[in-house]
Image 1: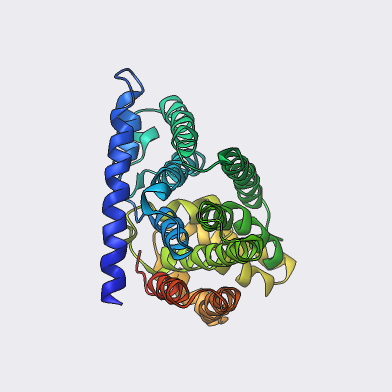
Image 2 (image 1 turned 90 degrees about the vertical axis):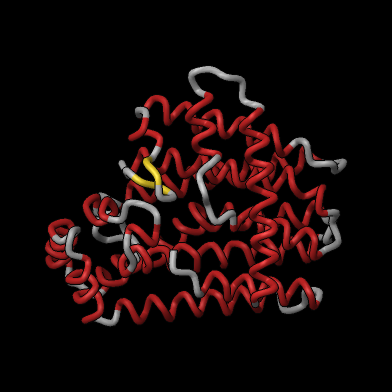
Length: 322
């Protein structure tokens, strides 16, 4: 596992250098500083790393994968910038969010600029049918936007079902991880069957990642997570834990529970204690494991070295603390 972590760190450093190179291509002007600020933020780079792991595993040249991997991370950063505006979060990746450091209009424009940069990087990928990569990423973005809209609408509902929640995170979180895997396979010409499996694997990995995020945001600290954690409780955000707990309540009890969450946003220990009473925390842990087992089965017939690395990636994700 240590060798794998060193490999991840090596890829992370290469992607960081690529992002730094992209930031230097933005001409000085009023949007230059916030764009550079966004690109310099220290993220985990899991999505581009996954693209590289998949692409290399199916035989693609490493250098050929870097533009697409860079594009994926820039696009992910764009979604975070706009997500922070909608959630009114103050911190992301251990720093002030762009709309707090500058203002909302600047943050919106920064997100727009990042999307432009992402597609500019993507078309540098040296494959004949690069237009198909653009189509794939464009389709993914449309679905991510749909998932974000669902997430916002759920804030005003107390009757969100588990199935609705899972559909939402498949779109909002699972889709970008899924397309990262798919594009890695496409660049490597992995074949239709393998690419389909990669797409499903990525979706399942994204769902598990988001549910785990929901859990960590409840039991971890802002220092460890590197982002604001109270806003989700205060806004009535529907996480896996909240939806699971709500499903066990009578209709007349649901509004009271949501008010309890809002009132105790500063006392997460009390919230976790209440969630644990009905087994919500345990069910959340079991759900994460179940989804990850499905993800492993999806790649059971992959080449041995790639399968081992993707299994290691799953273990790495499972054991994360932030």
